[in-house]
Length: 73
Image (tube, rainbow, N blue to C red; front, side, top):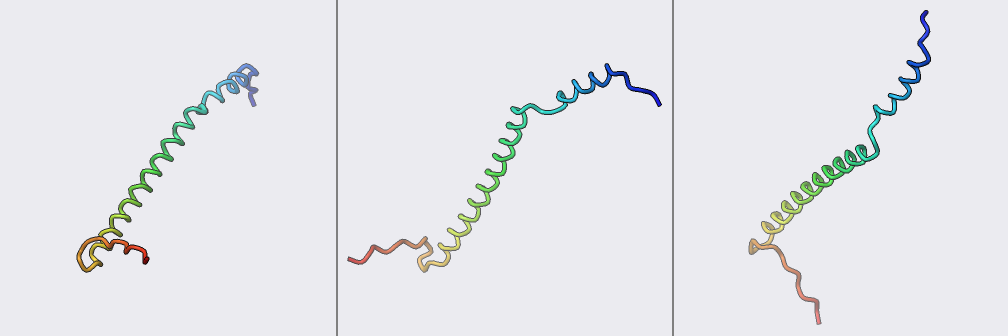
């Protein structure tokens, strides 16, 4: 079996950290991913809100959204 020269081991160990992404790169990727998830959640909530508003408009007798009655005096 052949031995690996010590110089090759040292070079390999020095190159290993170069394969990893920097903190800034990982942060940017995480920020992008979270931003995409937030936008998806916002779109979903907006769609559900518009569906709920349309359902309320259909359910009212005048076809408009219900209004709150003034508090009793």
